[in-house]
Image (cartoon, rainbow, N blue to C red; front, side, top):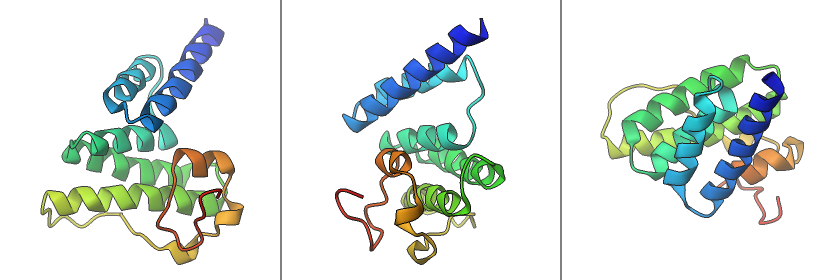
Length: 142
């Protein structure tokens, strides 16, 4: 049973990423909710769901998810320190945009500092799924 759940989660995850790359954000969000019915979303998956809510203009929900993802990514042992900085910076870019749109005076954990991130030390998978195109070292083939 666990094996089948993992297959379904993997299938939905890959399909959600594909939908988002085609700007089919509602479809991607539905797939993420399918995943959430199987396993709790943590870290990177929560970050992705936060981005989807941002893309759909649901700024309050996006802000909460992006903020929570930063905390979970910080505690994760799945990423290098540089990758953690990269993912948290990605969350921060969209989190700060949400806060600007809502004129929120809330202080946040969101911090964008590209100087702390060495792109050559970030996996291509992370760069493909979470492109930080405003990073000064970013190239189309990063």
